[in-house]
Length: 82
Image (cartoon, rainbow, N blue to C red):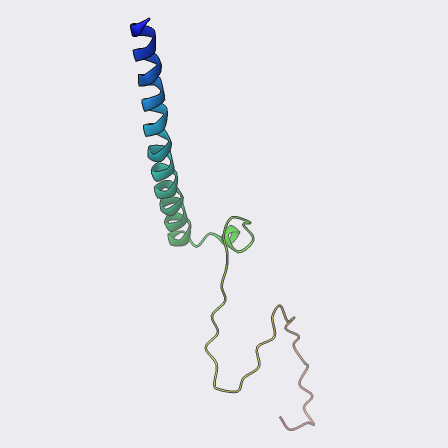
C-alpha cells in the first residue's frame, strides 16, 4: 500500500513540476518564433490574430491621423497649380 501511495505522490509531483516547465518553454518558444518572423519581415504578422499591432506615426504636432484610411491618388491636371 505504501508503494502505491509513493508512486501516486511522485506522479502528482511530476505533474506539478511539468506545468510550470511547459509554461516557461511555451513563452520562450513564442518569443523566439516572433523574433524569427520579425527578422524575416513576415507579412503574415499584420493579419495574425495572435499578434497585436500598434501603429506608431511620426507626424508634426496638430496632424490628424485617420485609422484605416484608404489612400487615393488624385490625378494632377496640367492647368492646375498645386
